[in-house]
Length: 128
Image (tube, rainbow, N blue to C red; front, side, top):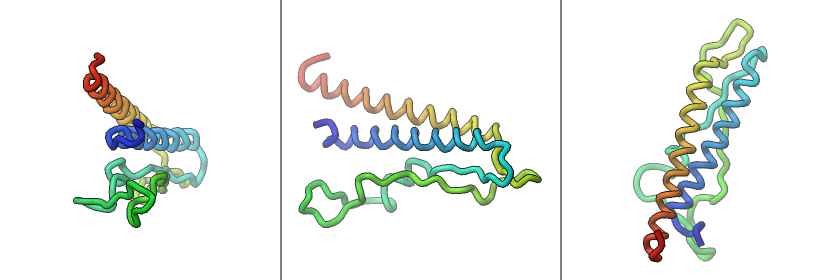
């Protein structure tokens, strides 16, 4: 039932994005001393919401012909403009720590949206 409500779908996707980005940040930090390793990152969550500004068609029933694929994964890409060390590594631990904090905030925000939606539903059915 809850997976059919767009608010819960959005918060779930936001939490999945935060988890995927946290995995990329952890991988970057683990390879901070690996020669030739390029720092990777995932596009911001807003970039995954649709194909562009405005209305985006969405398939809500099997008979619909258009709509984005429901299980799109988040792709980590190497940052081409990052400054590289003499050994070819482009991971800056300070940057990765900031990304980790930003990712935690995004995950916390997704949980807060989910909790708020649940509170609205509880209020609607007369439970508080």
